Image 1: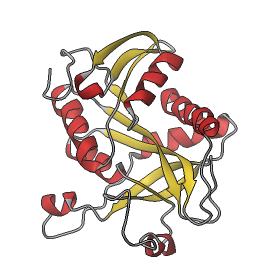
Image 2: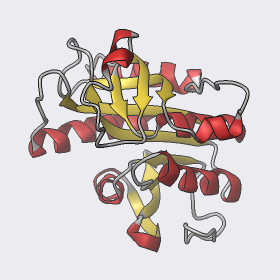
Image 3: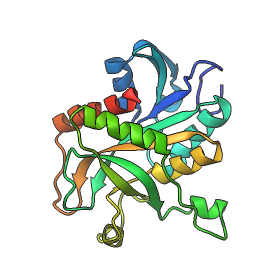
Image 4: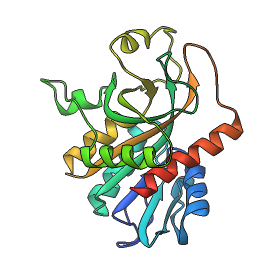
Length: 231
């Protein structure tokens, strides 16, 4: 048992899905896994372990933002010897060509967060996805009839930014979408020599103002979870 995760040693699988919302963790466990048990209820940040096609897998809520995710990822990697982490979450598109419901595989995570500046005071670390997971996720998605978009995403520390055009420079340089966790996930995976990938579903569009309906969020989120589980 770690400080924020109430699991005993061995209760968490080597492969973990990381939705930010703990209720999405619950939904994945209930809809996709068999023989499940809930190993964590601390702070209602639910974690479950079960079986998917005969393979043991866990799903753990991580909360919103790099600081929250970093707590759970540190403990999963350091205390429970997890080897693969796949973030499944939503994002806001900042490219005209990327629409609601599109699925993004994040090859890297840019950020304005100060977390890596604290780690690397004399340089700018560039956290990236694990190539094996990235390539495999792409192939799985295509076989499911989904054409994922691959590229850089931006991990913001601010959900509500005082500058309404804060994303425009990032879009100019080819960043695909805004979210809040990927940079932190990829950095910690590198530190602990683990594999990590972020899979995102576009739920909002910053150029058009369009937002996914509740029904679209439910359906398309499950498609993304299926890709992650097939890994």
